[in-house]
Length: 107
Image (cartoon, rainbow, N blue to C red):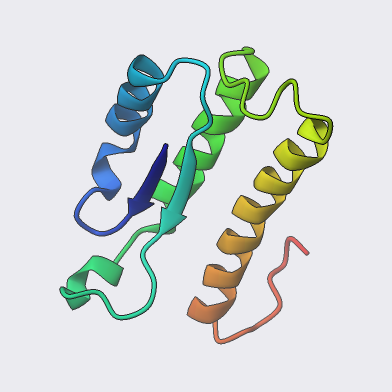
């Protein structure tokens, strides 16, 4: 399942995670963040903490063995690692845009 976080649903991350797990208990949950030119410009006013929370909930679900994702596929470990790296890259990219590309102290 795929969710795109925006200003309009950023306060519902825990509820979305619970819904995804109830509908598709062992399936993968992909989380995007609004980008481009949405119909409502306020959609882009998102708190990055919401995306981080989604990332953390996904990581916890994987650790509990509840999100099987790509298991059974020859490249499953690689695909799961790629998805985790992708979420981190998205967070880093957004933070760099907000700070004008300044180097963050945690790098």
